[in-house]
Image (cartoon, rainbow, N blue to C red; front, side, top):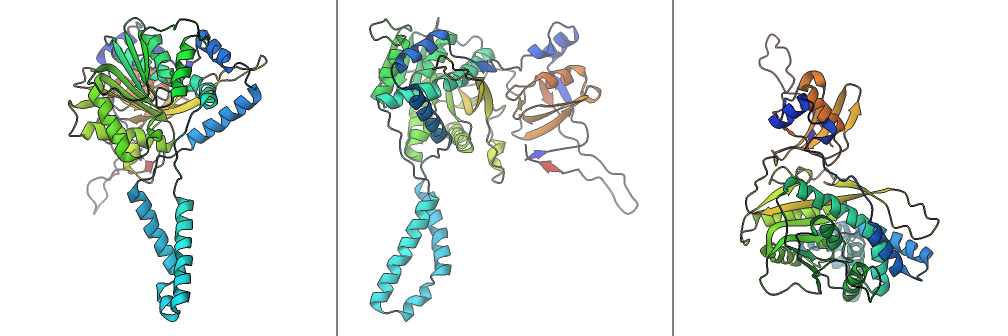
Length: 459
């Protein structure tokens, strides 16, 4: 829930940013809270490699299967826990008891009672099956791996480029020497990491349980030609995590949590990866409600776990280490997600693939203490509403709350107003927010004090 207040919410622009804006040394559109890129296209080399891999596969069927895969992934739920199944069963039993009362057993013969009990159990199991998500792992063969590369490659590359670019922006001194990608798929993590830190990373370690995914990922890095030398040096592939206690500067688990068969295995995997992390760990999922819940479940688990070797802190997107305010209200089903624009793979010669927008949920965790002084800056969590002489920003704040702020030049000053006006969903505002001040009512005879305007609205 987001509290809306009709009175002014004070803001204080970062002093160095304020000075640069007032002296016209910094344009509002380039303030340090802006996150780029907002649109990502596959590099020509990767696009050509994917087209080469498609080869003689029927394009129409491939595109159709790609759409089906995308829809399926967007609709996925994690495996239900035994507790969730038991709770559903208990509610269903109560429903069935209202319809098929157990008191009737006393009026039936032994044979009729047994038949009636079987009918009752069948009804319970039928309803339970209808209301329980039938999770199953996705098995990728050679063709399915190609479908995944076509359907998901451009989108996941765009998402990871956005996230890794933010990390590089927030910590310009971070030059990872080693990179671990768990659930690497067709190698989108390696594509993005090598685009940003090719000169510093000396080892790319990709782990995926599908042998066909690993083979396709390696083939893509060879530009789709088996006899060609790989374009990125020191890339390794495994189907399981290494047992040795090797540390990696950058650890990525992207679009993988849905594939783990239980809550226990998710936690075990996350702890294992956290132990191998010696810098930053990034968790990415679909920007659906379920994907957002999985990312926040992982974030909360790692931040609170007593088994971790070192304390962690959230670098992005949250300006705090507290519980996600989206999840604190069970009536609010809005996910914590962010957009990125990308262009799908153009396969047909006459293809005019338009820009598409993907929504994703993510978290960047730092092992050890954070040194980023801009960490408390609030983040815009929904599209900025630009109106005549005012702009409305919906923000996640340092205090772990959702706050709507109506920026005007008169109330907040032109620097703050122009920064808010040009910022978009996913950007941060280089300023500190004051506490909301409730609108006071005139005191009448027989009354005392003032009452806050507590109108609330979901954002």
